[in-house]
Length: 143
Image (cartoon, rainbow, N blue to C red; front, side):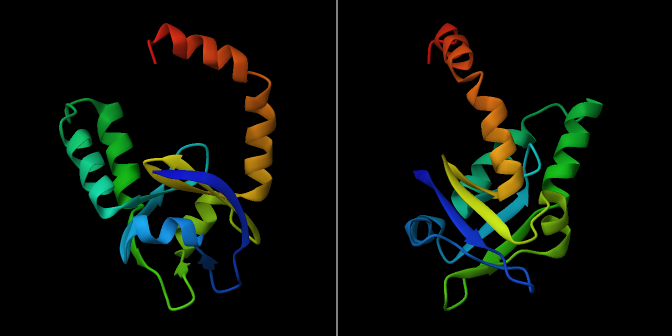
């Protein structure tokens, strides 16, 4: 399980240190793709395969399903850690997530998210105000 929030810097070449606590669970190779809210999703290979199976089960005849699946899979890339525990984030994904320098890497249960620090802080500020209301809605979902 991935948990925690880590602040790092992405260098000019697009290299980013993956927190040591995440490296073992991610494994040597893992998938990075476009996420929601302008962040990147990072999945260990087994988690990616589970997500792929779930998405394959959706009705491809629906335009919204096709659009999501295209966006999600076309942005995906397989990454490996270098000797310093860094990954190379491709330019198209850096652009999508607006990664320029300061980055937040967050553990979100079954995946890792990579955020620009600015967008992360904006997201937290907007969500914090509704945290209790969100919790009440989740109770209604029997979580």
